[in-house]
Image (tube, rainbow, N blue to C red; front, side, top):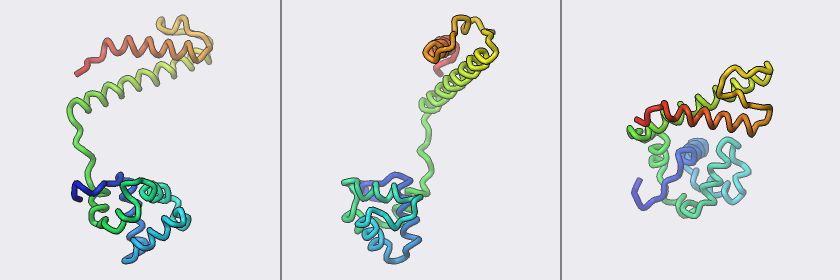
Length: 150
């Protein structure tokens, strides 16, 4: 696809490909008609994506006349962007943070259900969500000191 032509999202491109395959050679005309009817005749699975294309000023009827189905198929079939090492490390840190948070919330719920406070970091925890959130934040802060940023 040329750099001057705007690119829809992968989901929007998939909707265009589905519509084109479902309507054959006249898919552009049929999509233009569907857009004029607010996509009322379009299957619900792709209605939102097709309407987003229609409402986006970069797309719409003029774009529809120029777009090639092969370009939409290329967007749909494109592999995900390669992950950089920094992005991979950030994703790993985020996963560790989420894991700690989920564990802390689970343990806090279990302790409240039992009426016990097994861990020292939770000794001051009471029944309120705000205090439970503060306890989770403290656990995350403690864990952040132990997780290597690399």
